[in-house]
Image 1: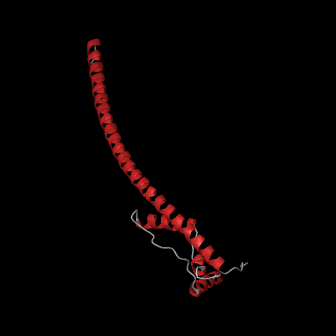
Image 2 (image 1 turned 90 degrees about the vertical axis):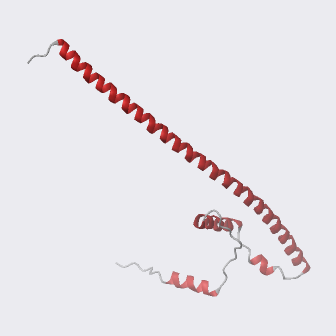
Image 3 (image 1 turned 180 degrees about the vertical axis):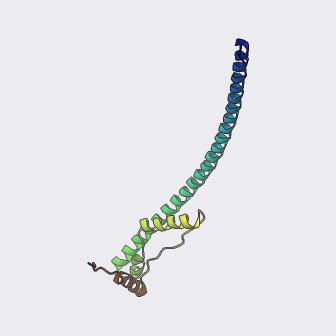
Length: 149
């Protein structure tokens, strides 16, 4: 059986049209998948934008509260200095119970990360108990520092 030129041209045209059809079909599916992916990304960007806006408003609220706390802290410092000038020791316990602002911020961030964005830290007080000190001594004393050879 021999193939003539017209038969070869017909087979080549059939194979070429099959390739063109597959190419068009794959191109259409790729464009559909790309548009779906772009829509999902746009939705994610919109939700992230909403989350950022909510966080910005919370940050503004926290900064406002922070400035109010700073003012109250400055007022209490002035009052405690005035009391010390008068010779009274009433404000002595309050000045010892203060926690650094960096530690307060770290505790608040840990609470938000653990409990969610609605977590609120109402107060932070240092733990000054002999039980805590004894616990630290027991934990640190339990470590074996000897090197075994």
